[in-house]
Length: 395
Ligand code: PMP
Image (cartoon, rainbow, N blue to C red; front, side, top):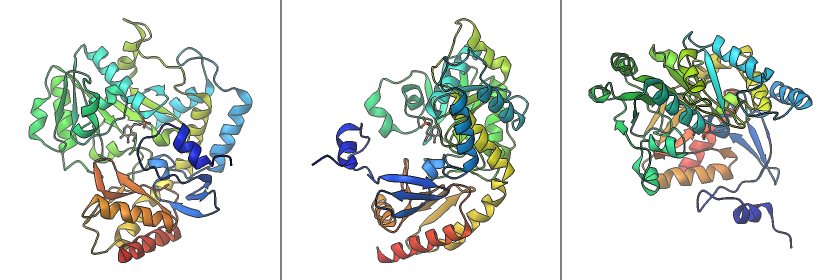
């Protein structure tokens, strides 16, 4: 008997938990996933905030096909002029504040974090990096060093030295940022903490403290960029502009792509002492940039951000149940809180049986994650909410 794909997955693909979901998806389109048995699922997490324009948007597929006819990988990042990279960098910077004018493409969000941390150290000639409790910036060792959660860090020590962790949303803690600080890295809205929004004036106070001390402000919008929170960039809602912006996830339109973006004056630090201060092989892969650029056009042309707030309201107003303890949201980034991980996990597993695909948050395991493609329809939201309530009744 040949092994099933499920058995091969468990035996030969590196595993990250003792109990992976093990669904075998064979097709994805829009807001729908289809498994190997032909069963359909409404996707409430869009690849964890990746598929903002839906799975396999025809314009993204066309752009990928066109690029396939021209070239795939031709050379490591940074040497050759590659049209998809150049055009995407131009388009992104047109929609960013003037000081964010130079895009360094990476192959993942974690690498964007790594690059930004190196850039800040190199530019400022300082060593300390400040981050916040319950923040998530990636899983590689530099990014892990600034993660705000001891459980995921402890087994991998020693991590980077000279990292200071402060409390997100604490005005008082900002005093600990000093002239020794190379950069402060923060998620504009903390996702894995279960959608934690900065309190009134806090990000402005953080910006001010960075200005006073000369520390660079790095905002991580890898999960919250591209309209997820109701504006193209989340930082627009708080009247601040970072010195370095981190992007990933939706940046590639379903293909792997990350970026850190800064002023050219800062970015050019990587060109000398040492030359090639940050390099990679696959950053800004032409197919990924072509896909990302097409997805960015779709996001803007189809005005997908316009419906985010209304869709958020539909979720929030539908999800009333005694078992739901709280809902935190900003746009289509929604955390539905329960009394425990056990209740949440039972619900999530049961919902999968009922054709609804969702999961939990890393630092808020009692919260269900709703971060669907922004293209989700009213009908799909209604079906999803009805099923969530029905399953909650049966638990
Ligand atoms: N920052 C944030 C806020 C993220 O949500 C993630 C991914 N979950 C990352 C960084 C790391 O991105 P990647 O998984 O592409 O390395």
